[in-house]
Length: 344
Image 1 (cartoon, rainbow, N blue to C red):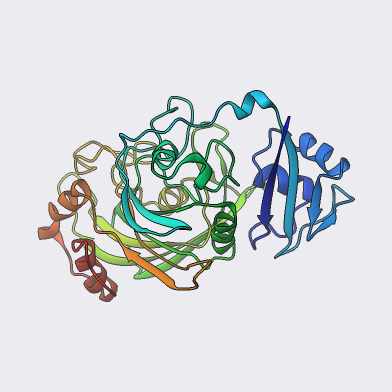
Image 2 (cartoon, rainbow, N blue to C red):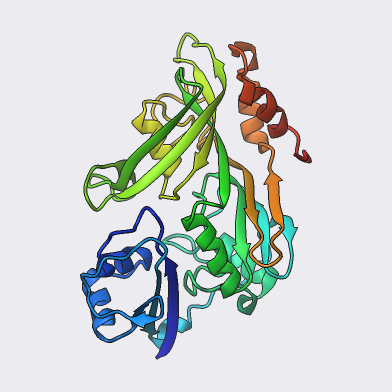
């Protein structure tokens, strides 16, 4: 058996949860009872002190550490490097990298994807022992994820300390991530906030849904409208938005857009309508276009923008003659989406 440690910082969305529930959720353990056994065994600490009670409530800013045993046979599952996956690296130093993930690439191994993931490519580029492993042996370097068919900027970490610091920035909502998304219909507001709970759907375990269940996780998305496009004979028009994530729930933007009645164009899971209505896109029009954060070691501000990939740029250009006029935010941002080397 080999020991592994998980380290978490309690964020506003999870503050107040029972300790056993928090660990089960944050650490992706198989069951809450397994987490209770870890607490009873003295394997869980809160701010350096061994936790005594499974029912204790975690507080904002608490650091929770969990030490658990991993069977040796699981340690044999170290990812194989895959040097044939292209990495579009935009920034790299000895601690981290910022890269632009292509659509169609899964972030880490999952059913049906073993050796063809971003994690396999990171192992080939950096070496397994030069990546942060706090997310687990099968997720080396991964700090946050993008859905398989979502493109754009991501951060990867080369050591555990950097990985933990970057995850803390996300939990404390100081790692700024902005996405551009084309949705169906006319969004009348120039800006807005969507704040709901999100939980796994009881009808389809592959999808998420807005929920008021007490176990649903808080999800906050703000948006700015960039442009609107008039309706055509077989559609209700379109709106181009910039979304800012304050939380990072699975499929968050896609679920929130469906919740307000504006499905993401091309979304095969949460969308609807014909191929024509989806502007011939077979993947969601969702791109992580801008990221900004303080480097956890140097303290410098890392800020990058990523122009639209070819398929999304072509789709957007195909409806330009239907534009009803860019908003103030759109006048600035849309130009940058077509300029790969923009500098703020």
